[in-house]
Length: 160
Length: 76
Image (cartoon, rainbow over all chains, first blue to last red; front, side, top):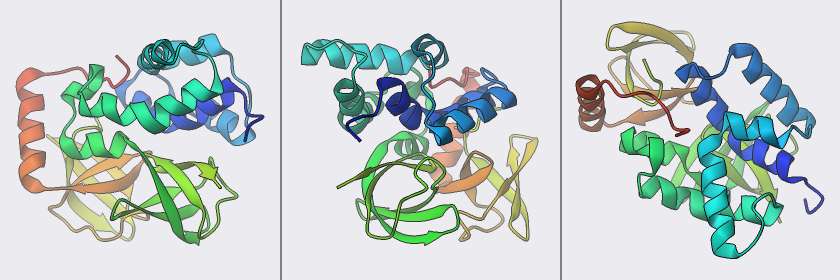
């Protein structure tokens, strides 16, 4: 996990949001397919392309980096953003989150939970007294008992 | 039309739900969330029904949305 590049880590966590971008009409179906292929193959995308697709996430990551006194395009900063700060931004109704209902805001948060069942490309993850079925496309190696993060309808990263 | 806004299930056939968004109809799979019935308000992501939304909250969100005609954008 320590060898992951910032572009790869960023794409893993932001890919679930690309489905929202598609519905908003800001990306095409073929761009979503390309992102899916990139995330599955762990391709290193251009930082500039990621920034143009996800400008709000970049803005927030830069804010987090400033607080940490670090340069922003860094795996530690990106992980701290998605694991610790992202949900606070949602609770503060930052940017576009201001317009979302409560259930959708909760759905947009990143949670850490335990895989309790696995069926083809679907995982059931238990977190904070809740349960959600998610896709394992980004994390195909997830097994029952693993501690994983989830973002929207996807399992993202495995933790020891 | 914005998928961050709840839609109401008007039909379920096998594992395909038809969902009404203030008149616009879309379909989504119920494979990830089987415990849904006609009349439920739900959130859809990646063409899958992901989450039920309590009726009161759903109606409030939809009304707010219709009233303000907001732009659907989480990346701003």
